[in-house]
Length: 203
Image 1 (cartoon, helix red, strand yellow):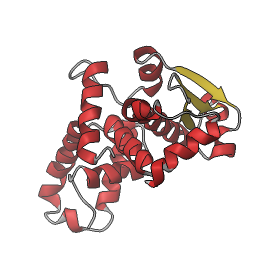
Image 2 (image 1 turned 90 degrees about the horizontal axis):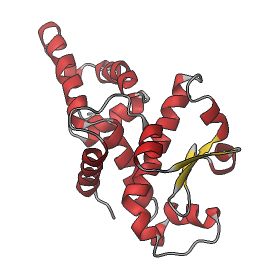
Image 3 (image 1 turned 180 degrees about the vertical axis):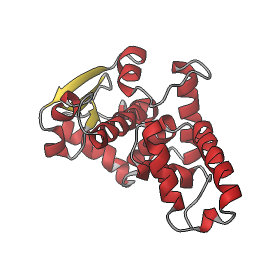
């Protein structure tokens, strides 16, 4: 369900609907996108991470997003790694909103726990919906054209100095570390996008 190309098409349609062309600022402001553009409620949830091992979760009726209260309180002044994790978590839930609310509407849930289990193991397709939401979040937060621009700028600098730099251990990681702050994410997410987009796959 929701193969990679399908998710990419849905992300770009979503982006066109909610951002003016050429005006996507980085890092993507996921809270403004959720609240102002989509009209979703942001609901602080005490100990959400401790109880469910997530920083954010879409509500059963898809009208809001629960966020871990402690992480939300620290959103502007907390450790950067926590801000990055929460940004991706909220984008992941936006993925569920964009991709799965019609499917979920066909099923009745009596508790949040039932809904969470459904998302993680929909009809026995373990993690299918979660993987699609992750792909949506990654493509939304790391627009492929912006990542390509970063890579090309990096490549131009290194081509003259180290002709074989693409094969030198640690250079790919250095690139990920360098550009991750621009997107407001951790370096691992950038590495995944390089693989998924075919820009600089790991060997």
